[in-house]
Length: 263
Image (cartoon, rainbow, N blue to C red):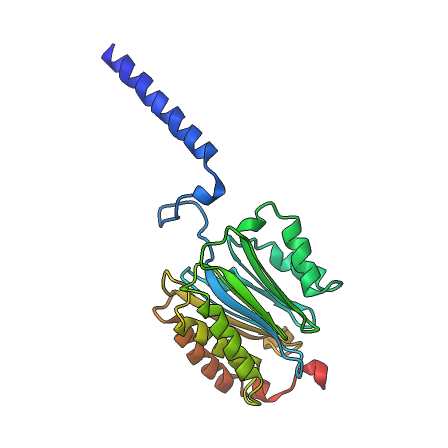
């Protein structure tokens, strides 16, 4: 009898636990851990931007997540650049780039988020090949979360140390892009560094990435002019800056050559 009672009690506890999981709302999902099968949220800060002089499009991003560069940034020369983050919907990348061939950044943001039942947990930044930029921050993104949209760029972030992260990024990008020195990669990195110095992701640091798209400028003629990633590092933004300088040395001729579309 005691064994039977124990079996019945264990069964009831198992059923109760299952019901609790089924009733759990999205905003009550437990934090992921190394032993969890759930995908980690891409709580991060990023910037998407366009250089009207060269036509270059680019993205810089940093986060306390492994390999942020394989999740957040999407782009195509002559089309646009997209950053998808928070509980990132990676379909926003390829679908968004296809939509950008016919629509503006703002229209694409509206279409992508409008048809997504999980939009309250998404964050998205887009710049198109005309320099029009748009951002979206769902109302259930982890605080602090928000964005700044400016001329030819958009900055967005969630689970940040505070609003100053995106404000400092926007201010630094404006100053760098108007300085008359450097190129889009330098301006993006300056903005990312400013965000990092302002506190960045409040969980800490782990990975960063820098992408610049230019027609025919990548290895073998692809459009990935600059494709740099730091997947797991104590100071990923600093390491990304070092890699950019190595890139300038290793691919010196590409850095001296104007965008093929401008020739």
